[in-house]
Image 1 (tube, rainbow, N blue to C red):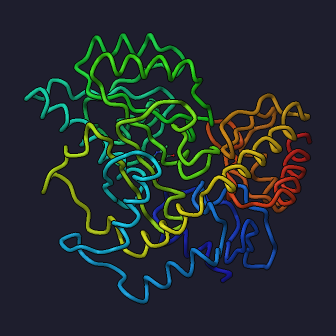
Image 2 (tube, rainbow, N blue to C red):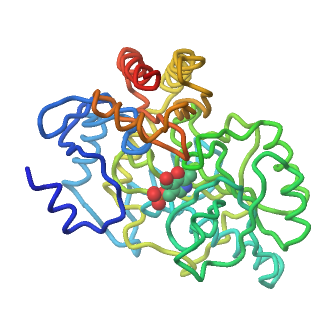
Length: 389
Ligand SMILES: Cc1ncc(COP(=O)(O)O)c(C=O)c1O
């Protein structure tokens, strides 16, 4: 395995600044590298492995389906995607689901749905603008880059998809202004911005923009690609903000490690997509969906309670510690603003056996939801030492 790094540099597209470690296996929140060294995982593959590594129940669900039917075209009925869609709708109050393979694809579906809904309603394309928030991140396709409310993503790959305007994530009056200046069909937001710096929207802001959207006949799209599937202490983050979105997108933890994205359609848009208007070869893959059914059915009140408890514990440990300026986020989606550069903290923590992430100048923690309290405390102790030095 010595030359894996060289081969990677030679054969893998040069889009990632990889850390100098080769991971080979894991169990729960403990990951091993190729020398056998163990690490406590506070990254979960960027909020994906929510039941950690090698989770037995999920593995059994996946392997059972894999041994029966690994893929079938969406031209035919299969059981796993229907069972999963029913479970997601029952637990969220949404009405139908479109399955893709990633967060970006889930968002593409949401964007297409909102525009088609407006087209069907008004008979033209003059109401196709979508308001997204500054600091947001919605994906890497050309359209979801356009949707992303950060200027740095809007260069080099143009021409970009038109029809997105960006509102302040603090001042609801900005949403009102943009809605009055453009023909808007939707407001799209992450309730806790992940890549943008782990910042949760305030309840007051969300109440105000939901009111604006409702009054102006705009759909509300919530991007729960990162916040979803138990991460923030409720099954989906919107459930703690007291409103019902029209469209919810999710991915990452949904598949528990297999590629799966979902666009959940509420009452207003449940029939907007019709035959031929959208599709995906792999979307709703039986193996990924069988695993996701297992994951979603196990995110129960007991687990969510433990997420909230561990989140409070982690915050209490970090708040006010030496070298820490602020702690942000929601549930087990934690941002740490440090005096030291975040990249350096993450690099040094890795050497000391803790996997953490960065997000816009902050250290970001998104551990498996099943991490034990002992593992979490041990990892935070190491992080605190690194941050304080
Ligand atoms: C909020 C949000 N939306 C969309 C995406 C894109 O998801 P994917 O990388 O699965 O396409 C991400 C990925 O980080 C995300 O955090």
